Image (spheres, one colour):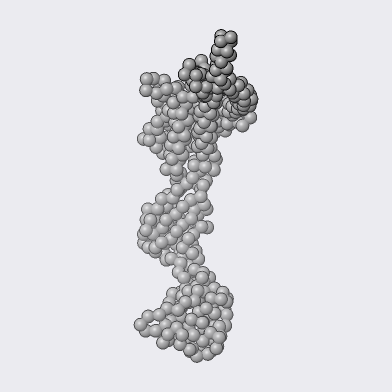
Length: 446
């Protein structure tokens, strides 16, 4: 009901009506359908947000399944354990064969260096002359003349000519010395200074020698203490020499990384299932989610529950997640029994790997990946279709509201014009009464 805000007092005073207020009341009443559409928009927006969150969660789950099924992923990771980590550490590339190796380190590779007797300071003028600097099999004549006859200038000259050494000036209470350190370790970088008539007195501090070690009874050497060629796929980092101390190197599957990959998979799966479960909660404390009435959500839930319950045949007893120590709880989420999982990885590693990675024979990973690929398909995936429908419905409502708003603009103007006329009439009402009264008075006096 529209309140015209008119009474006898306002009529007598000729104040008219509040046109804006009257029109606003009418327009508000006529906007009832629009308010329903706007509420529907809010519902659709909430549903879209939930669908997008679920889509992100399933894509994350897909990545975690891939980490388990990837032939070059977690199950191919290897680790190397050293019985003497103070003497040697090691790492292994993916796919390196497992095994146990024995290592004896006779001596480490060294970096050759030279130094000179001290002079007064780094800027002291040096005697002119030459010396021959040999780095491994290469040698160069270095001339000291007016352009480089201080230690500072000589070091800069040597470095700028890239002779295979790093030259620097070291100073202490005794004066300044030229130091030369080879850029190459081992015998190929061994330094020698010969044919010296420069006035500088050189001393060999360290000879460049190769590392010497015995691996599985075979004597080997390396120009560096980082050895990559001795054991295929394994990098050895030689840290100390101990000819009488055998080191045991054990190349094994990196079960820590595999366990983490499995836990990451379980966490991603539980996140998706938890999101789905939250949509169906309905109690005095919690209301159902925006997707509670979406039948596709039930299909998604059933599909995921079926996927994690999937079982293979044979495989020496490791036929499903439960046999690995990954159990389903009442709400559909998974929990990992670390002790049981570690036992399976230790005693049946190949079977665990086969369970996740067997292809074209109904393996768990292959089956789960296929379902996830179908669910996440941008053209036919269940969530993609729901999102497309949601977007379409939102667009229809947006256009409907926009058209309705356009019509209301004209409707408002029509009402303003109409009630403005009423307002004008009411404002003129006292004058009309006065005129009629005057005319009646004139008539009665005749």
